[in-house]
Length: 154
Image (cartoon, rainbow, N blue to C red):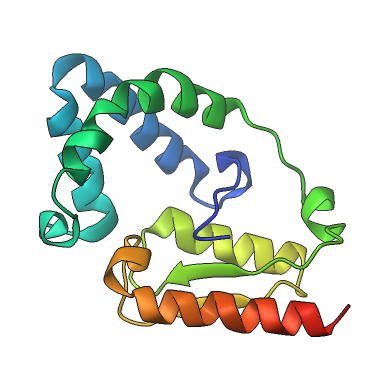
């Protein structure tokens, strides 16, 4: 899992994150899709986020903002996922996350690790949430190492 989410209710700073996501949804009605996406992208990566994106990627993502704001975000805010589900995972699972990720993602890694200490938590040094784009070799190595280890455990 690459910087997975958990229901906000399980995170220590839940009220702060819920307020921020609701503010994001509200900004969607007052700003263009590209303005909203630029704000989210800067939050996830920093002000140079456009340097990371391939040509056309920003426009495609902006086109998908309506789906994110009107369907995915409301569903995420209502999502229920309990510790027992993480504790009882039978399949091999690994979490990959960025060193310089947002607070919400760091809290998710901490909570998941607390719920199931058997899940490897692999940090990509120096990276942000956009680590698959900015650190593809490190990401690929983390995935490959995990697959080899998981395969040998069967």
